[in-house]
Structures are given as C-alpha cells and as structure tokens.
Length: 377
Image (cartoon, rainbow, N blue to C red; front, side, top):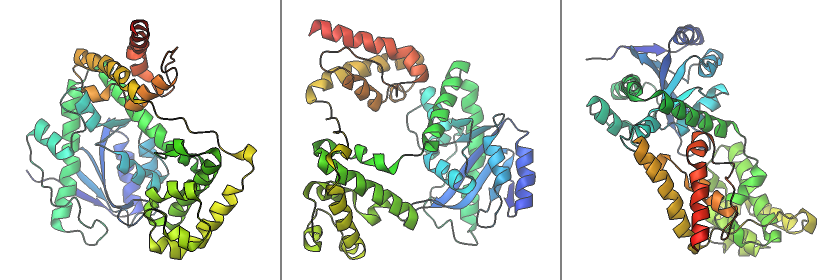
C-alpha cells in the first residue's frame, strides 16, 4: 500500500503542522544526515509520522525551528525514535532542544525480551513482517533533488516506526513503560549536560599511567582538541589523532622533529598546528605543582573480574524474572564504579550512576552479593 507523503518546505507550513502534531498522543521521528568530514551532523531530512502518512521536512529550506522545538518540548506528546543518539544531536543542533518524553523502540524491544540493540530493519521484520530496502542508508541526503528511492525510503522508515511503536507499546506493562521513559529521560539529560572540555582527559584509556605533571599537559591537549574540532567543525581525529594524545603528554616533544616522531602523528597536523601544539605542551608542562590535576584512578585489577561476574549474575537473574534482555539491566560502568568504592575488602557503596528503577530493584542485592563474597573470602 503506497504511503501518503507530505512535504514541508517553509516555516509557515512547519508551524501549522507542529500545532496539529501537538494534539496527538505521539509522533514518530527520524532524521537523515551526513557526518563524514564534520564534527556536527548536517541534517538532510527530518521525518515525522503519527501513523497516518509521512511528513518530510526539508531542513535546507527551514529557517524558523521554534514551532518544532515546542513540539519536542511538549510533555503531552511522546516522541518515538529508534536507536536515537545521533538523531538527538541533529535535533539539538537544529532547534536547541531535545525530544521529551522520549520512547526508544530499540530499548522497548529489549524490555520485551525481543532482543538487545536490534537494528531498525530487523525490528520491523520481527514486529511487522516487512522487509525494508537498505540501499539508501548511506546515500547523499544533502543533494537536491532527492531521488525517488531516497524519498520512498525515508517515508517508509517513519511510517513503519509509528506502527512498530503501537505494537510494542501494547505489549509493555505500565511498569516497564515507566522504566523505558526513565531511560529516555536519562539519555536526554546526559546530552543536555555540557561536558567540560577540561575534564575530557580523565576518559583517556591510559590516563592513569601518567604522572600529575603529565596529566596537566594531557588535560590541555584534550581540551584544545575538543574546542578546535567544534570551532572548525571537523572530526576530533582531524585535529589530533586519539592515539597521539597520550605520547604527547608522556614525552612532551620540544621541536617539530620530535613531534613528527610521536605515534600516529599526521604530517598535516604538524604542518597546520605543530607550533601551537609545542606551545601548548611547553606552557602546560610549566603549570605550578599546586595546579596539577589529581591522579586518575587505576582500572580494576584482574582479580576483580570474578566479583564482576557475580554482580552481573544479579542483573541476569532479574532479567530472567522480568523477561527482559539481560544487557539492559546493569551497565558495566555502574558495576565497575560500585567495585571501586571498596575493592578488595569493602565496605562498598552504591555509585551515583546506578539510578532509578535499577537501583531500587537491584541495589541491595548487589551489596548483599559483595558482603557474601567478603565473608567467604
């Protein structure tokens, strides 16, 4: 059955449709974008459906996104997306806001035990028994005019998303729906939280191996790379490759020749930013000791892996009781943060990043497991 497709190419039409969509209980949303040589995604198309046809918004022609921002912000309208982290970046960039309440159908599939991290095509096949064409995913969404195949692909995507939502939501209990929306809120909150560029160095894989003086250099390099990538709108690795940052901080080259010998240092980087990098390193290396960052904690030792396995089993048992995908239960970061509060002998405290229903349902069981392990050691 052909899909009824409506184009929205001007601000007045967008505002009119947004007002209509705000009277609906939900809207299914999708985006097509390009992100090859840029830091920020470049929107090529925005798709909306309430289950009756597909609306295709041309972001190259829209100048006023305020009505769409009000739709995204409207607490009475559920925003349905699938595996949406990059879509959220598109919305934030275009409108300055993010969809809430957010209902991710990929998470819904996990809550129903259908599967974890399911791709959209596979979920549509599973729920609607429809096989989606795959050929247009990587095509040029900034070209105009779009091809007939691109338009059909984009319209089908959002129309089927509305249908998938209705089917999945009918199967969710009120409790699981509340948990799913809670996860959506956390995803949005994490994106809204501006990460301080001066704190990014702490996520570096080998940051814990650096001295405090070296960390002072590492901090400056990470922050500079982040700010420059945003300013130039290019991928971070186009500024300085990830694998070059640690040896830059560790060995602190003082001339262009030494800089060129750093692991994975691109000649273009040396040409364009070599002198800047040397100045950053020189100045950061001279940071007074009282301003050096605190050491980055070491990762958990191998001996902790047995305890980690016991903690994962708490989540797996709960997943079995709830008929949910076990991967949804306890995130590795939360379990590692829990162990770091007291390994190896305790006492342990539930970490801040174990929140909401997971903390309520499994927090005490995790502490009991650790206490029992301590007694049997």
